[in-house]
Image 1 (cartoon, rainbow, N blue to C red):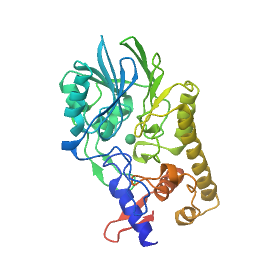
Image 2 (spheres, rainbow, N blue to C red; image 1 turned 60 degrees about the vertical axis):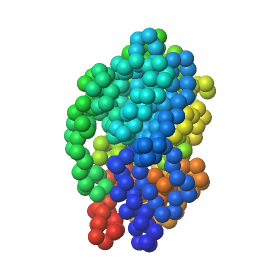
Image 3 (cartoon, helix red, strand yellow; image 1 turned 30 degrees about the vertical axis):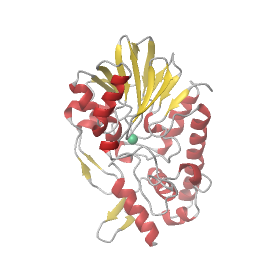
Length: 327
Ligand SMILES: [Zn+2]
């Protein structure tokens, strides 16, 4: 294994679950925006998606806010440290206290500030598994490291299995869980009147996705989940990804096709008994790296993630040797 590959996988494993989307590599062509840890100088980007509906982002995942006569509803709350500035930005938009938070999934870069809003009176809503995952410590499928449960105040207290609908601020807000993809906790949130959909991390725009295998995430789930969304939106829909800029149906379709191409290339080689190193050498992400590779997940890392999802093989991280091997 080359030193570059060792460095790549070290960063890959070291960063996974610090925040979903974290896989730094030595050959990264582009630094991913949106993950600043400079809390003091952090600014909140605000964009109006439709009347009374806003996109906000400081650090971590993307937030959508419905602000109107019924109160305020958020989809996702970003890192815990973002809470004060997120609250201030909402205040400037005329928002009162937040009544509901819908969590798209359990990862801390999208649920970290849940507790801060819950302590102000918000009800946290999530898929059944979202609550379950947040109540548990978890062991990385990659290196066996353990993370503690989320703070109790951030756990969903209103959960659902397949679908939940809220009628709020004149909107029909529909949360849908179909099957595991990024995790087994993923909620897609439609704002039907505004023609906006929040995809959580099932869709990360201009980034390769992470697949959280420890929570039953699987590359096979992405296409059914995304196809179900594509069937319900149109060319005017504003598609909010878990990370990255607001997108269109066309961009979501291109991302879906990228996943299918890489998955099928890796799967074909797995079927003929190729090793991960041999598969990586074939560069199955080659024409996509320019758009999707970043210091969070590059092409080699994404290839390894897909390989792991397809094979179920665990990569054991030998920290002292700074190396990885399949077990
Ligand atoms: Zn995530």
